[in-house]
Length: 192
Ligand code: UDP
Image (tube, rainbow, N blue to C red; front, top):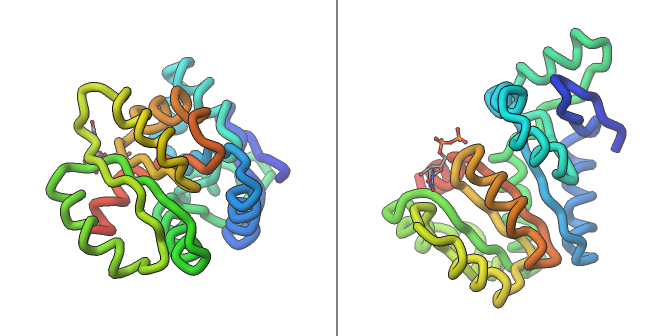
């Protein structure tokens, strides 16, 4: 996709629908993919933290998750077509994954949220192969990363909040040939 750079972060210039098609193709082709859905808070934090900025810049796709990003692009005279949020993208991928019997690994949120997800996800997405569901308050990432590597999920969703989730993904993404995406507080929403 072409990109529009706002505060040194290159945002993809595309629609949610086109983006999803691309992600589905990449998952099908087993291409390692790192998605960041960046809101203004993430962009500002990256602006002040060079290491985190480099991590975001190393993602395959950064989407505009927030009207503030669209406004920024508009002011630069390079408008972006629409918001592409983490929650919408997560839901769309889970629906597609359920329809196409893809596997997904969930890491993040509090243990009680994860307990609810263990019931709700199979109900909402019956065709989805849920190969991992771990809370986000682990001390040592190594056993979780080893489990992800063993399960080889098509999709890994990390709900650890920023900057933790992007740092986790950037450090460990090479253990699979699938998609990795940080989804912030989305597990809390999914759990209801
Ligand atoms: N979280 C986590 N581990 C941590 C810190 C946060 O799993 O060490 C989870 C938290 O429970 C919540 C999610 O990360 O489900 C997102 O938190 P928040 O809404 O604060 O982050 P944001 O959406 O702003 O990235």
